[in-house]
Image (cartoon, rainbow, N blue to C red; front, side, top):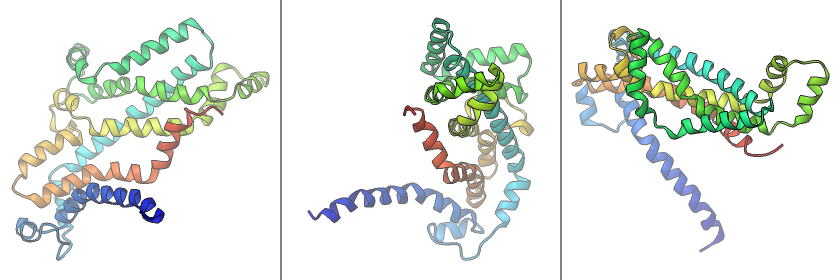
Length: 276
């Protein structure tokens, strides 16, 4: 086999993989721009004869996709931001402030949290939210979203912070910085790649979360996009174009984040594994 052909085989395989992955989304996108089910059934994989954007207006306004989209967006962003800050502060205390035995014990406890599947905690979380009196409020999702992401976030950010040279910390202390000043002015700016990675991963997890949102929230005005899409599907199950439009609204933010921030995600995950 020629060397050039041997080198090109992985590229062909990856290209075929990309086509297979994108094919369902392209089908859904084309279907969302078609006027009715007749056009979809006659030419399911063809480009729309005429771009019908009314589907997006109907789904956004009449089907309340705008409400579900906003709920998911602000819940996912706010809980991810708080989770990143708490994980960064915890990682700073465990890696840069030498408590020796105490730090090791706390770090091991944090790692144990990664071994517990989130669904196992569902009943305990439901009882806790009920006793706190915050069921059918967004607080019932905000706190589990924030706390559930902490173990992985601490693991990733801690690995990154361990790679920061001690000389920078020593120079900052000599300049008179206290622990909070060292954390905010020196450590946080240096860990931005890891923080961005953790934020994106946490946001996407919150955006796609369904189990807690379906049981903790029953008011339609408070539903997130995954749970709202279930009711949307039931209400418009005979209108495939409108259902495809709702799917596009649900998937687009995820694709946009990965498309524009993939380098930051890879950098944040890999940088902590290399000692500087």
